[in-house]
Length: 320
Image 1 (cartoon, rainbow, N blue to C red):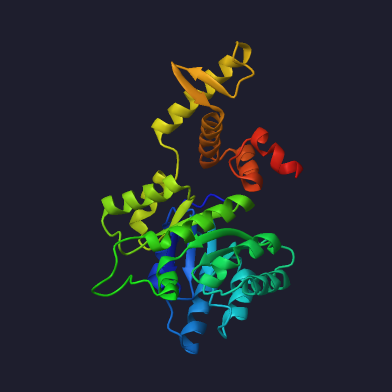
Image 2 (tube, rainbow, N blue to C red; image 1 turned 180 degrees about the vertical axis):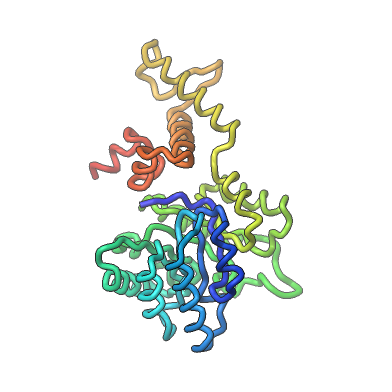
């Protein structure tokens, strides 16, 4: 099941000022971090967990989804993190530093144990070669995962990629396979696929270029480190006025040909140009995406179940 996850902002779970200000952020997903942002000390982890629980229980967030990045499955804080934040009312947890499908299965077992009557979802950060290799298994067995997210920095460390230091690479070729695999599995399961815009994209122009590249590949949104990029992400991964106008025109013109000589063709001539069926399907998805963003209940329900694909496009998939 998919959600609208265009902008996913991470904030540390141990800074009272941030926990207060983040209530006003218009992000699709607010990710409160108990993992990387907190020192690996028992007192620090427990204090942060208590602060996050209090913040969730207090409520008042504008974000559409409250997610908590819990500590890794191998850590001593993992189980109680899940128990505490899901009991407090978190919509989802983000699982990082998982090394196999068994780590995801373990998280699911605890979720169902702690919240048996409420659906709590899992977003998996793809930050290790093991979790990347096990995506097929996770896709076939998981019932709680609804999103995958590329996490470049930890993945670079695992690969040994020279992403840091004085001779750091500026190429992202090393990340291409990870991105492609995350996208393919996410689309197979109708999950969200998230990319990352990090500290290397500090400037507004650089950030927009990075997001547009991710959107062009097919990602649904990005994980952000800076709140000022939330409106940019919502715009880039939304539907522009130009694209909306194009989609409406194409769908209308295609429909007008249903009663003409090209009614039985998968490619039709519109305004002097040949338009193939996948283009028409994409235009329909643009319209549905806009309806979801606009809050249309029927479109949102369909999106949650099947993604943006039309009923006709999904017919073959449903009968398999």
